[in-house]
Image 1 (cartoon, rainbow, N blue to C red):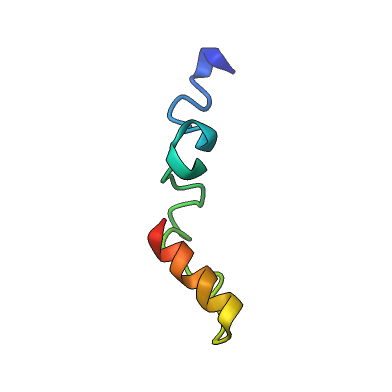
Image 2 (tube, rainbow, N blue to C red):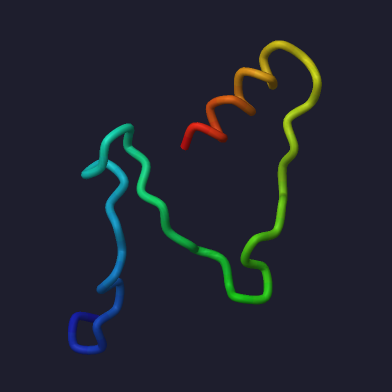
Length: 54
C-alpha cells in the first residue's frame, strides 16, 4: 500500500487538538451533503453547538 501512496494525506484525528482533523471521506458526488440535523431539544441543541464549534 505504501508503494501506491495509499493514505498519504490521511490525518489521524488523535494527533490534533480536540481529536478532530478536518478532512473529507465522502466521494465528490456526496461531498457537502447533510446526513444529520440535530432536533430541537436540549441534548441535540448541545450537539448542534458542538458540531458548529468543530
